[in-house]
Image (tube, rainbow, N blue to C red; front, side, top):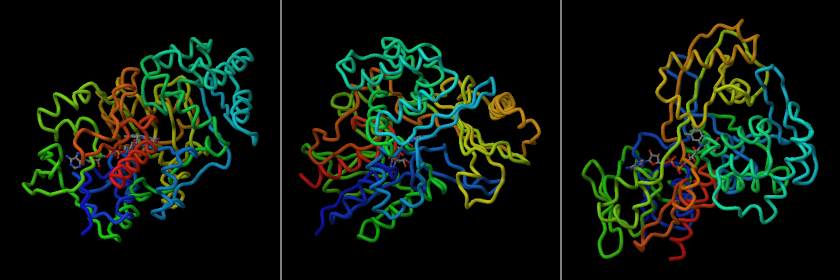
Length: 440
Ligand SMILES: Cc1cc2nc3c(=O)[nH]c(=O)nc-3n(C[C@H](O)[C@H](O)[C@H](O)COP(=O)(O)OP(=O)(O)OC[C@H]3O[C@@H](n4cnc5c(N)ncnc54)[C@H](O)[C@@H]3O)c2cc1C
């Protein structure tokens, strides 16, 4: 009889673990609280337009090697479209378009050339950006636990290059205010994305809604190998005895016995399903981990507003604009834009009307032609717990997958994968938990 692995959580981490373990012949039983898979990366049909709306635009990178391998294994990689060369358009409040465009040079020269081509920076700013490259390669990378802002200042990065280049990158990848975000994590992003080949820095965007990208493929893979996905199956408590988790109790009163259990839920949920004693001792760190929000403002107009696929916005509160008609070519044209505010702590309390007004005012400011287009409809998605808050303090709190309970393992983007809490971190954490079970 195959050993039974109960996986709690049907996001990228739980599904990646489920795919690995079902491939290795385990009896995978994946429990998902909601009536759909996907966790913090899912899509839904907008009630008024019928358009597929992501819970937030997700960007992938060429350096997401584990995610790419996972999507390939479940036959879904063709739905992810990668840039042929790393390229990002930025637009500032003076209506200046500038493009971070990396030419075909070996890494890291492609990035340096891209930086030197950027407008709006002085020659001095660009020359001092070389300090970052040196710091990533040398001993300066060890200069203690600094915030992104502190680290950039120690490397003499002017306010201008911080505001126009490093901060947008840090906020997009770490989803936290650079004044409190961990420099260690930004260094990791820069090393992964810019230290390897040019392909590693290229951005990938799903050409379909997020759920369609991977959830059906992963479910089919697991089920074709005898595993089972249980939707609307909310775990209430882990039941342990003699240093092991012996079963999980569901909210509906059911109980599922297990040889192994993987928790692939966010830290606050793990805290809830553990017993008081575990929460007070081994898992006491959970209380100190916090999350950071992302707000997405979806707008539909009566005519096109821009012919660019996506734009980084400088000097405004909205940070990114995604042209969904161009990014999802199969969807009917509806002049649908998704505007994103990451590290959105100050915006969660705003009403829908206030967020739409804010987004429209900034769109009108940056793209004057957008004033000619009439807004037809809007949908807001506020993700309060979008990602781990990558503060300096969080670096040392992220747990390893192995716990003192011999058959209980942790996965999830927030665990200590060495990467920021992203899809890549989630998939890697799932692989690691599965590998630990296979080895045990
Ligand atoms: C708006 C937004 C934008 C983002 N942008 C990017 C991006 O551009 N690039 C990037 O790489 N990452 C991005 N991320 C982060 C990315 O979505 C996450 O890193 C990833 O989805 C986390 O996957 P996970 O499996 O670790 O956790 P989750 O996706 O949170 O999965 C946990 C699952 O557990 C389920 N669950 C919870 N409680 C229970 C319970 N008691 N019983 C059973 N199941 C339970 C949940 O419903 C959920 O499905 C973004 C996130 C958001 C929200």
